[in-house]
Length: 134
Image 1 (cartoon, rainbow, N blue to C red):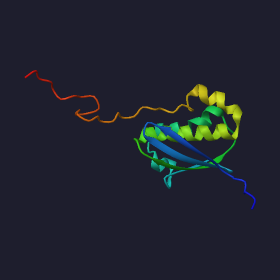
Image 2: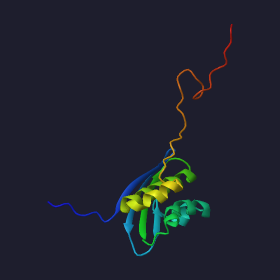
Image 3: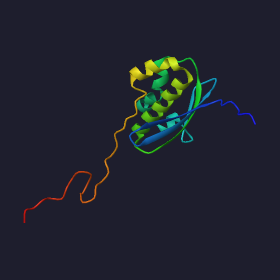
């Protein structure tokens, strides 16, 4: 049986503890669907909406995509940047020439900062109980 050609690009974007599964389908007009909600509904502020659409604005891209995202974990700002990371990876997959522009803008970086785990015998990750000599 012959494999059918995929019509969409699927990537994963991450930042801190947020993970975004991005699916980009070529379309006649740009549209975003995040966790079954519209972009303006999911991200209420224009700042967060701008973060999500930054990859296309930076490239001055003429191509349009219907973007579907499943995002989880982290805060709302972290989720927006995870989506941007996934979209940027998808654009690089589609056209290799966009890599340098997106890399200079810092959209292909994955932010690895996360909360450090609590260790046995300590109150928090590094906070130890008060020491007394006697």
